[in-house]
Structure formats: C-alpha cells, structure tokens
Image (cartoon, rainbow, N blue to C red; front, side, top):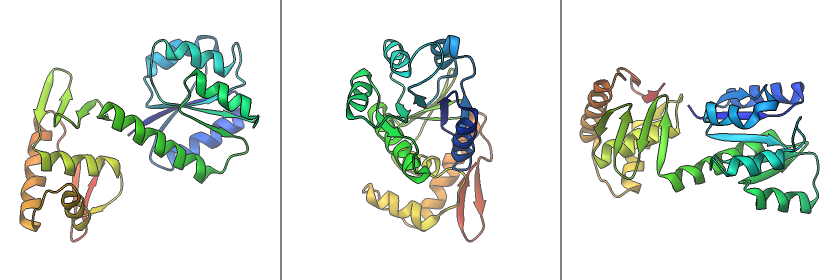
Length: 220
C-alpha cells in the first residue's frame, strides 16, 4: 500500500484528505510536528506528499526547497492561490504537480495516480509493505533476502500490486501478459500463480494472493 503524507495545518481539510485517500486504497499519514517537518518526512519515507504552501514555521515552498536537497519524493503542492507565478515557483522548487483549493476530489486522485505512476516508471521500483520490488531486474527484496521472478511472474505480481485490494480476473492477467508480448494460456497462468506464491512464501509472505473461486485473484 502506497503511503501519502498530508502536510496541511487545517484540521478539517486534513481529515477530509485522509478519509479520501484511505477510501481509495492509500495509507494516509499526517504531519503533526511542523517545527521538525523535514526530519518527520525523512523518517516516514512517504511515497508522495500533499504539501500546502501556507504551513506554520516555514512556507511550503521553503520546506520543498530543503526537502529537495535530501529526497526526490514526489510532491503535489496544494494552495488557495491560483496565480500562475505561484505555480511556476512551486515547479521551479521541485514540485511534481500543483492543485488549487477548492479542488475536485476525483481530479486530485487522478493527479496523485499520475505522479505516482511517473515516479514508479522513473525509479523502476515498487514498494509493498516491507518488500522492495525491482521491476527491471525481476527481484523482490526483503531485508537481506531476495527472490528472483521470471518475466511472467513479475508482470502478474506488478499487475496485482497496481490493483491491490480489488479482485483481478484471470482474463485481465492474461490480457496484460499479452500486452507485454508474453503469450500464455489458462493452464500456464495457473502454474505461474502457483510459482509466484511459492517464491513469496520463501520471504514470509504466505497466502497474500487469495483465490476468489470462479472470479480471479486479489492481493491483500
């Protein structure tokens, strides 16, 4: 589950954002210690930050400048100021996107998805709980343990991860494999799922891919 940090001093807006994110499959955390904002961000290691420009102790723009010296975590700036100069400054300081209040929740979710997708493509890595998934190398790492997946196994796992907590049909998986020029039949998909489960079990992740009879699979 991808972790998003909300940096907003308005408690009502913060709670609305937290509810929105959690209802859409994200782990939402909030910054409470604005006096040590940078340290809190680096400690929590979020996958994305929603950063309001007007926060206590320092502006969001200054915080972003300081953050960019230590981290490339994706940042979406949130502000009530819709002036183009503010947007330009935010982008120049290293923001990945910008949205003004009041924002449409669906638009915000789409922007979050787009920024996270770009970030994952650039890093070629995904995170699942305490696992680090290297898509390019086909490696899943937990602490000092590694498992190596075949191309088909990695395509299946990454698709399940990108659609975490919802049922993925067998047809969806086979279509995704075909889109990646990996042509397998129904029996081959069953074999690949079985092998993937066995490898995940080696690093302590047993039964995380559930079978939903006559429907498909779900990654919890």
